[in-house]
Figure 1: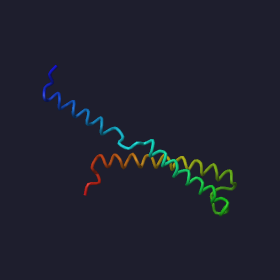
Figure 2: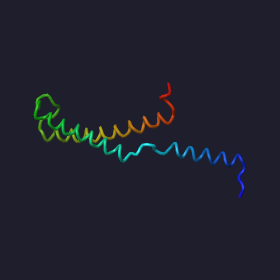
Figure 3: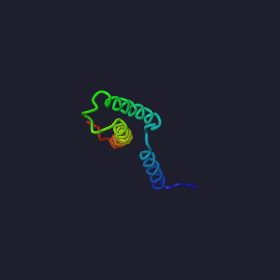
Figure 4: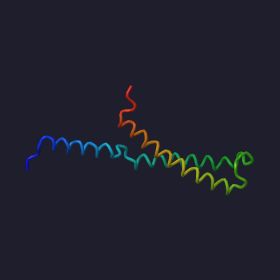
Length: 97
């Protein structure tokens, strides 16, 4: 089967679009690094209660731990979104001088 030049161009455009829409970043590795960073945040925030319990927005250590866990999940989500957003900007050429 022979392809017309216009059909070949259309196939190339579609494949290029498909590639651009796929993530370039290996999110497994990135996710592991993000999880480690979020876990460091969690540990440090948990320790903060022992250092300055009267300054924090929680009345008990258990309440503080619950807030820290929720905040850690949110931080993790925001990190992943930031990586994806910046990758899209890079693919779109938004960082060209």
